[in-house]
Length: 516
Image 1 (cartoon, rainbow, N blue to C red):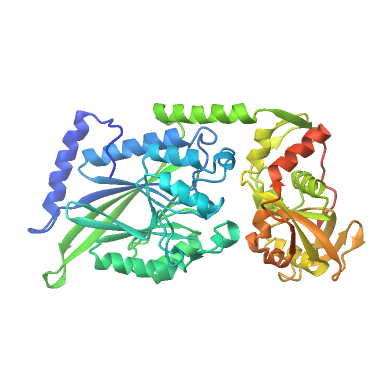
Image 2 (tube, rainbow, N blue to C red):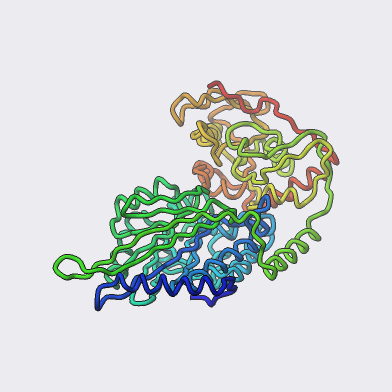
């Protein structure tokens, strides 16, 4: 594992450690290894290099990591620093360098073992392969395969050994990745329980005393994984941005929120004791800490790297392109459940740039989480903050029936905010979320006229949706008139739209009406 980057303990702590080490050694039966203190330092869903609201970011994460490594070393134990997926995207700078800066900063922080997240695939498999080649971390992807083998730069499992104990790690990625990201048709995602069971069994056969699953999936799937796979002891998770620590007396789950605003610290005291018939068995007990990074002094060298990246970004992007005459908000996830002024502005820009009859984009692609008061000067940086995925606008020819099917998909999860919810231009529709999915859209008009099932319409959408992302599979059946290779960046179209207008004043105007 990595060397200690920073040591901040006094002599009194060292003396206390020797006392504790003697006490732990006394617990071990003759002929068995003394207990091991294994500290798992966990971060997940970190893609913002500078943090948010005074917490998180590379420099503060690095400080906590260094402190926990030092603490474990002084106590005679071992620290393993883990990452729970979603690093290289989305962010403004990642939209430009495809996540290269995040890998550089992660190398500086010093993650030991990581699992891929769905956002690792946002720029496609070729870019991910390049980023993994630049990384100094061991990346796990037990249920991910390409051409029948491991994804380049990943492993299914890895083992850490210390003081006679073997700790096995495996990595599991949400099987929804092909729907919510862009892994391409050649990358396959096996069911997590199936892959987890096989790799946990193999790790046990290789002598693992403890099996830790790094996962990037929802908590419900994590708990189901533990129910189905008895060979996994600990889950260190991500994906749903939850901050939690759970132990049911047999297995443990920990998630550390997002953006490094907290760092999860799980210390396991692992002990080999004499079991029935004199056969040794391993027991362990957990101690949880969810450390806030607010108020933490960031690592100076890494903070300097972040400032350098930020300065380069600002120089490129801090150019005024126009202003908004009205309040614009992308706060929360309102564009994932209803028509929004910003969604209308974006869809109008796409339709205007392509000349299509209709434009439709997913609310989940709008990510800035920001309020823009009237009179705000809009910049390129603001636009790329809102649209960080680097999607291009493509044009499809669809029948009216296919447009209806796309809208049905868009509102199929409208009970709760969903990334697939459509923001539209050139059409208006009404839906009722009380009705069954697939039967919710009650009326549609295009250019003021009723949608006709058999009529052909041109539709502008983003390249992610055109490839079936967010379950817009019907788009894959449409005729591609402008493909991603020929299309322009959505962000560029919005920038051009604002520049041409000088001042924009989009409003909510009844394009989407809910009846429930």
